[in-house]
Amino acid sequence: ATGFTVYDKTISGFITSLATGVGGPLIEIGLISSLAKGSGYHYTAPDFLDLIPLWICPVYFLGGPAVGNLARGIWNALQDAEAPAADKEEEVCVACKDTRAVACPNCDGQGSYETYNRNVQCTSCSGRGFVICRACFGRYGDDPWDIDAIRAKMDGKEVQQRVEQEKRRKFLL
Image (cartoon, rainbow, N blue to C red; front, side, top):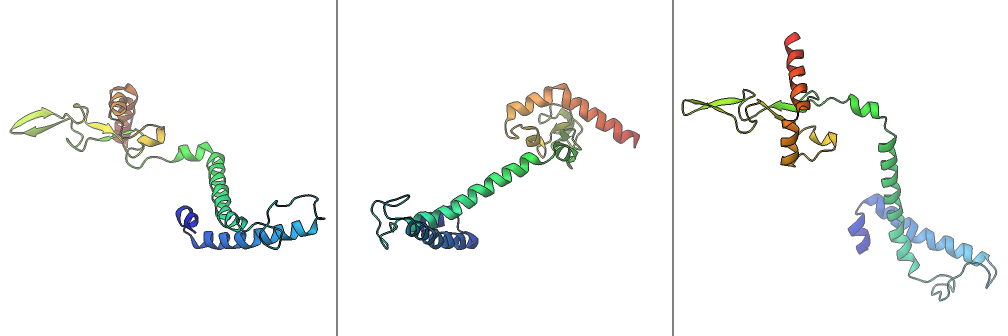
């Protein structure tokens, strides 16, 4: 029961465990009893009806949900692998429209702000007016919390070009 509560904890898992915990040994009893004595599959030290050991029931009880969870994991992995790449690429980031950059929240996208009656360059965006979009940063296989990688992306021309294209697009609309 400890293994079940640690690894599954669902009602359907409990029903599956119960079914396999009772059904598995019953099927083994049927198979072993149908074989002639001494031929084929048998246990060396059976405890129950001289056919199966008692420890086999907990093995089946925990094995049912374990195999079910394994099958579910494989099924989900296969479904993710079969999803067409075009569907994934068609999703546009709501925050940045796939430019990978958003207006700097510190300077409101201006690149500078006024403090103590002085206009100063924003240190959050280095005066660019935009920062990397954390909403879609992970979609490209990047770690959204890796500050060095974010700085490298921001210093690169790719993000700056995308931002300029988006600005031109908005201007034309």
